[in-house]
Image (cartoon, rainbow, N blue to C red; front, side, top):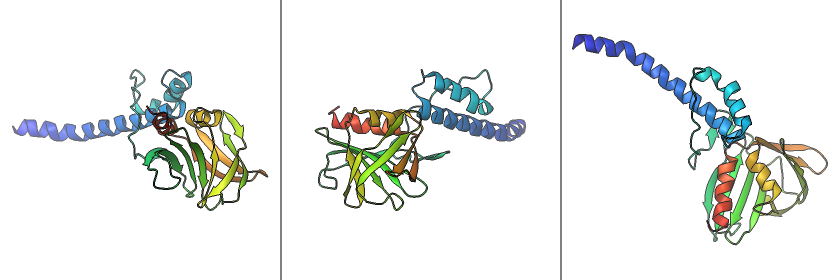
Length: 208
């Protein structure tokens, strides 16, 4: 019994170290999947090979993790998108879901979709302000758009189609930035987790 106890005491730190390394590897793969998924995308494999090699042996193949659970709002690299149920009795009076991210400067980028297909992008924060007009949404690797925003209860909002190009771009890229109509950068947002969060909102407003 004394020998068994000694062996367990010697192996316990190694087991703990292995657990940490697996956890780090999973977080790395999760980040690649969020930014470059689905797993069939060659960019995802490239991300795993270049970014996650230090966490797992070269012969190991770390499996992609499932979608982040609702309420998981941060990753190792910063804020993560999350989906939240909204009810028709609260502004903006939609029976639907809100998918949003809050950056380190407390600026907010949200996508809202309600039953019946009402679909909005909203901006909020002190640097963004509430002045109505055109604002540029630049999505890295996907393009840039200048929709017209209106002020509504302290935030800016614009109507978009649930299946429109801006919504798809926000789901498929790694980062978005907001500029004023005259070219001043107002805010930047990670799109980690946006595919799942926005997808949940779109599916709900489509009645799925």
